[in-house]
Image (cartoon, rainbow, N blue to C red; front, side, top):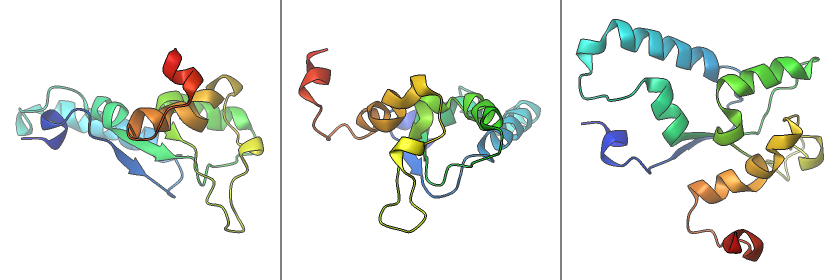
Length: 132
């Protein structure tokens, strides 16, 4: 049936699309799924749950509203702390500088590294992280 049912540890990474659209798409998918449940009897979770478990999004380009709290509300709605992977797009002229990334400060460790390590299991882990 569904690829996510068969391989629950499979990840897809969406890059260079921004993220502002993600929460509204997830809300719509969940609403439609509930209304059309009989069309997909093999699914065991809401579409948003599959997304949070199996889809990751790059930070490049991360939207930059004049009020950062608006961005943070979107990030919270999509579980950005766990679904975002840092991407700079360097050396392009519009790359994202890690020092000016507009994410909640307490998320930096996960978004800048740990989330990628969770997805890309073949990347060697730093010694300190491996010991923990």
